[in-house]
Length: 275
Image (cartoon, rainbow, N blue to C red; front, top):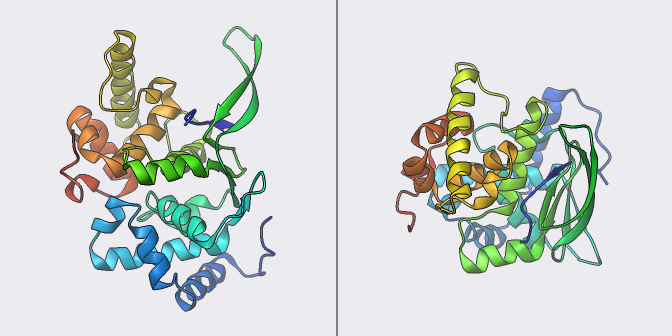
């Protein structure tokens, strides 16, 4: 289980070979695209997506439609997940994989949405072998090979207050992280990327952030990034797409690594992030 920032059933598959399955999904999403009104509504919730060139917005719209076709959305505690809610979540979930592909999310099938924060019981073993049990109130959770769990209230507040946080991208970053094993801030790198460089740059930036936080100095990056390397990667991922200038200026070498991994360069789309 990968916990995330504190507070704040699969459809029957058609039996196709993988290649034909992908073609079928793309055909279906193009045949049934997100309606214009719905797309316009959810596009307003992402400054980055809205600033993309028109061809890229069209491609992102198709990808979001495919996401909605391949993932189930389940409401918890009596919440009814509307079409607008589904489309809003799908849009933001597809931003990190815009140039990677929907297959990066093949290991999980559903999104669970709570009205607000939710409680989970966690158990972990420390470095001394002592088992700890605790109860956590969360607004987001990414379960290994399980669903992502979201608080709709947290998402609504993000949209209304225009913060630099993005719960959906944060949880999806955890999903990308665990593709390479444990959640540790080291996703599967592309050919040509050097694992040693990634580790060196991220560890140096993480240590610098933690040192600042211990000294009582808060920076522009959410302090929750100092929880552990997995949360550092997830927080930086959401910031990468909402306030890229913060990372480009504060952690320039990390920004370059993230741009290569996500195959996107948000700073040139949203350079004027408020300080």
